Length: 406
Image 1: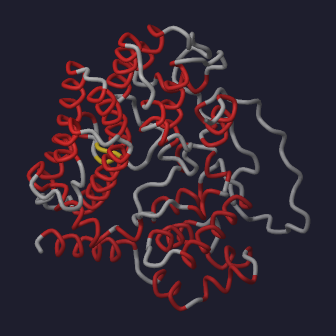
Image 2 (image 1 turned 90 degrees about the horizontal axis):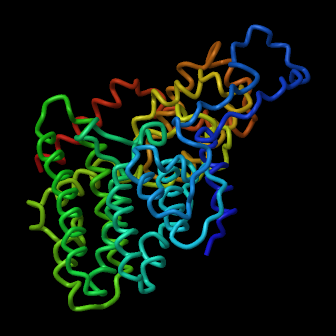
């Protein structure tokens, strides 16, 4: 079981911009031998991270009523992860949920999936405690994603993101627990909540997939739906073997695989489009995890790959990054191009970064190590970088249309 102190430290390291701003760091001394006076490589220091939502710096995590109130607040997860109050009992579950929500779309998500989907539901819960936890889960699934994810399609009630899949998995964990505990009223409420959310996502995708001009959006949405179906499968994998759970398995499991009739087969169609278009981009961005500067500001969060030209431009110009930081990102992207077969997002990021690098592309190359320069000189790299952004996105649009109409 991960300790409270370790979990809090991980969140603070991963999404530091959610925490109160620290005093500005002193300016570093100029790099030795740097005679490039005309280089507009960005500010040499990082500004304080943006302030978190206007929530109290501490909360009474021992009060079920306080936790339920925070679950109902769209930014309640911020108050929970920022709190330094002691955590015991049910507050640990709330902290795991809030930490997961805060970091799951970041570069280094906290590893509490198995707890909120499995381990913390395996022990028997007293009826009152079960009721309190389920109330928390049902409210917290509406926590906001603004400022903690760039991988969201749509806005308002039509927004769909991977966070919805994460919460579906927690709802299914609660459902499995209630079915085994023979808590029929709560099982009915939870089943209806899962049904409602899965149908919502299916209808949004079905309504957009034929729309002219929505091809790029639908590719991202297909990826999200496919991954969300995977979250359902992961949650169900923690369920015990129990006959009463079988109808729910048949309803919610393997929506992107062989469960072809459920939800009008929309998840099947989304999975086929995802496989034909964005599946090589479905990696976990391990090369970027070591670049700590990318965690400093929500602007730097990674969007849906491979459409990363604009993100590369942000990396090239964002004032929170120094030139040293940018070169570290370049190195990580080059590593990803070399080690992740089939992906195109890192090439697009390098293209956008090179396009907007302060000064000229030649100046960027002069800053690279010999090994990094060789990475840029490779034939595949040159072939990928030669494709303009508009041409690349047109290629992806045609690939989408072919998969959609197959």
